[in-house]
Image 1: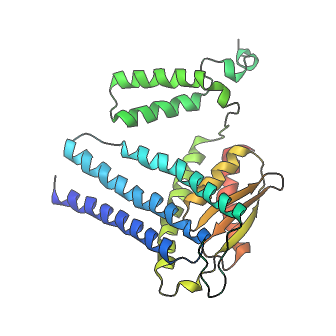
Image 2 (image 1 turned 90 degrees about the vertical axis):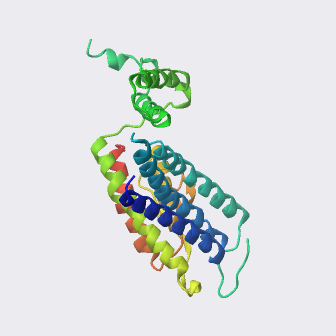
Image 3 (image 1 turned 30 degrees about the vertical axis):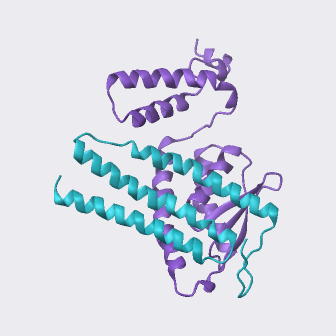
Length: 108
Length: 174
């Protein structure tokens, strides 16, 4: 495995970690429940996506055979993440959780 | 002979769900991480018998007008928008003054009542960072979407309608 491949793999790993971290920071900083829902959708799409890309590249070059079952992780996440986000949002709507008001932070 | 296909209802054909068979085969090969002949055979077998047993759960069949359009939709608005929106939202969330954000709900009037199209549209909206679809009113044909930053709700509705709903309606023929 050349140094070039290692750079690409580390790039995707750091990128994925960055997006996951930013998603968590966002979940902490955002003012209300509905805005916080946006955190999980982010870390699953690009965060996990680029980590899966890194894993696919790494194992393809390490074993010499193309390794693509990381695609499945992304696929299943893409199917399930919107559903859980939808249910959370729907439940919150039915409970009539507070939305953001000026200056005050209401915790759901 | 040519009208034989018309007389047999889809659920009694040998392959009740051709698309599902293909998808199951591809998923099986990805899961096994190989394309050896034995696994293609096994995957085809599983892809044939699983639709037989699960036939009654899937009464409707999606009608795809043009697979090329679907593929183009997957890359051009979908993946591209996920990447762009990710960067936008990360910048919004890491900005020093978070109170400048204007989160809120927007209501998208739907042009279709096909459950397949609506659920794909809702999933695409949820997967694109910055928007989460949170409620569907089928009777009123409304999709309620929460957006993290909507300075202009009217424009956001128009963007979603032209960018996602129109191509999806073309692809799924309704």
